[in-house]
Length: 124
Image (cartoon, rainbow, N blue to C red):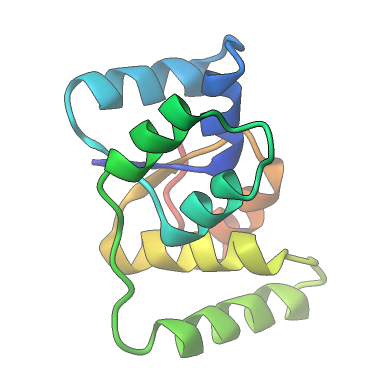
C-alpha cells in the first residue's frame, strides 16, 4: 500500500510524466493506492477539478485518523521546527497519517525529505 501526495496526484491529473506518476498509476491498477483526508481536501479545493476526477478521487480508499493524531502531528511539526525547517501544516498532517499507518508516501514535494530524515517517513 502507498499513499499519494497531492503533488503526485495533480501531476497525474495534468498528464505529466515522472516516476511518481508511474508509481501512482501502478498502485491504482493493483488497488494499493490510498490517500490522506488532507490530500482529498486539497484536491477538492482546486477550482479546475472536473466532476469525473472528483468522483475518482472520492472513490479512493482513505487513511483513517487515529486517536492522538492531532497531538502527534503537533509534536512532529515542533520537532522539525526545532531542526530549523518550516514544515507546512498540511505536509505535517499528511506525514503523520502516513507514519501512523506505516505507509510509504509517493510525492514530488521535496519538503517531505525533512520528515524522512527526522521522523522516519518512508518516501518513494
